[in-house]
Length: 455
Ligand code: PMP
Image: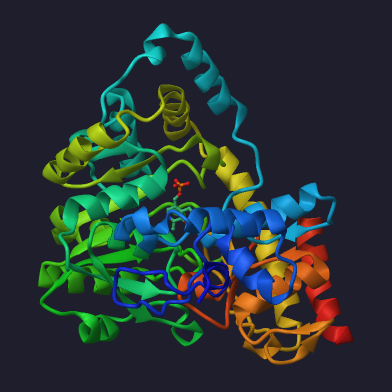
């Protein structure tokens, strides 16, 4: 098959991991959209050319690099931004970030740090000591987990903490239990460390939570770790206290490590509660890595500060890797993070109220669309509607047979960007963020509803 054709069909890409047929999002930074939109015949020549240019170097590239999928969520956001810049009235439900500015006191702390010559120099790879101490105190304040500052490693965002955790704990062939739908980065971070993600599927019948029976069925003697996240991206699921305890005890009894991602700890709604697994299951603490960061709680996605908290030898291993990989996180961003984690939680209270209001509007509007059903999200800022009922029927000028195609169709027909469920290992669903202005949210879902109603 000619290279150009292979590009558009995505043939010839290799993958690591157990699921080489996992729906690919393409191989370029704009891959997901290119692949989907090619169906809609609106591939732009420049983007097409970009893929051709990339492909001419494929043969020289490592299997590792070729196996990594681009982040579908970043790609859809970039595409929506591009269309917006071209003057299209795009409403984006793709963003995984608060639409609020970072609180001023946090910004001021960074500005002050930038004026201090000390910030202009390298600092310890594991993070500034004051920040590591403050993160340990903040963790005790917010989740009740008793972390030692020596166990804290400050990273370039929570994403980097996920990557480092895999690098420190996994050897080639180690299996990692991954409840699905999963956040796009998890399987890639596992595969980059040579690990094998083992998907444990969930759906709305269990509120997108995994049971210990399912874990029992998936565990093998190669299982090294379980990746756990509550509240969850992409489903908004929040495990109950009992469920977290059961999963934690299950892992502790079997000596399986848990990476628990607590980045949405402050974003829970209604009766849902956040609980930290190693607090509920203390015997797990020496086989547990907590991942967290300032991005979601303090509207600081662009600052890139996160952290991992683990047993001190694990933290030391992560520090050794980080010392060669990236050294210290930007000192100004660390100063901002210090202000964030030692300051009040007022800003997140305001954001949470807004998200909760939008969540309820989104849930009601989505469930009012013929062909869409949406389980209630109890945390984070995502709804995960099932959209199978919109497939294989004419919508406007086209018909989608997959949610990947549906995402392209919605962008084309009504300028609405959603992230197709394929990106999260869940075809037939889509992820829609409710971290956008109320009026945009109503307008965007209204456009989908209008398209369905008149088709
Ligand atoms: N974990 C989860 C579940 C997330 O959704 C995100 C952001 N999308 C992160 C970690 C990482 O956030 P950051 O790297 O911006 O700190």
